[in-house]
Image 1: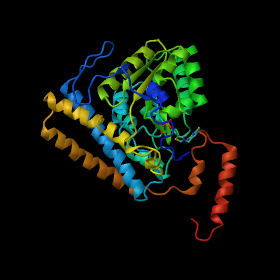
Image 2: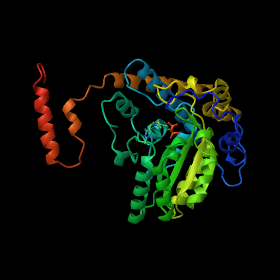
Image 3: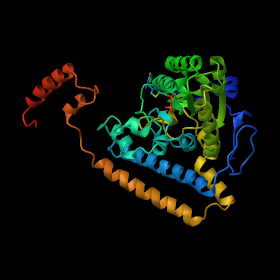
Image 4: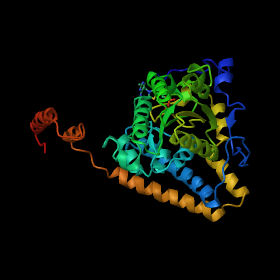
Length: 375
Ligand SMILES: Cc1ncc(C[n+]2csc(CCOP(=O)(O)OP(=O)(O)O)c2C)c(N)n1
């Protein structure tokens, strides 16, 4: 998949049409940190809540950077960085109620943070010592999904279940621009639409599906695709935490109150590599990255807090100190995670005991014991 595509498509008409943000972008906070009006969406938080969103984004960025560093030092097999996508994840994450249920991809570290999942569990999966490590039903946050787009079907089915149980909650399914090409995602849209399922499809359009740019993925802006399935779609500035929060809140409330699914396209940018085994310099122009650095979600929120005197230097320092503490803590707990016993691979295949699994476990156990020095 990682092929040299420098210049493939270039600045074609298709790129301008599908990839450019355009006037239909919901934005509440400009890159300079100024609040702007929007006819359909608004935000009115307390200074403490605004500070909370900033803190979330800083801590999440730090956890993410720690994941990358740990992989580079051989402590993780792989890491999928979220650098640049903090606003989309924290905004949509904080829009959820305790009863809502989220279905993530493999990059939703910021949403996991908002759902109170211990970051060490995320690291454990990428270290290969557990399969997630948190209880999805306790956190209302499903396990990470590596199979592109499949979680949108799980989310739709779960939403239909909630609907039949008469629960006042909604489901949110995360996926990327690349996933929008998958059959599963399109099937999920059809099912959600005809069943009026309470599910919000939250697409983080980070411009790239590994090395495939937007113009190689679609010709019609993603959010417009929803109309063809019979539900609304909206494009939000994915680097604006306030707009992401307001739009996702509205979409979840709409779903919760029986009005069916909605597609939210968070227009953002993956500033890092696709994963730590990817090298974006092979296919991406550096000026593109520079352009998006100017739209950094954290700097934008900081500028807003400063301009409105909602936070002082001491606050920013405290958040940075807290980030250091969180990073040191997860590093220590990650490197001390023991390797699981090979036999434990059989432990969670089925929820209930299963005779075939018992047989296979016994067979594998005997094989393992046949090695000299095995315990
Ligand atoms: C069904 C399936 N096909 C292919 C892959 C390999 N793959 C891993 S990530 C990726 C690109 C995904 O791009 P996107 O959905 O935009 O998400 P992003 O990683 O950019 O957030 C592909 C093709 C996979 N994991 N699953």
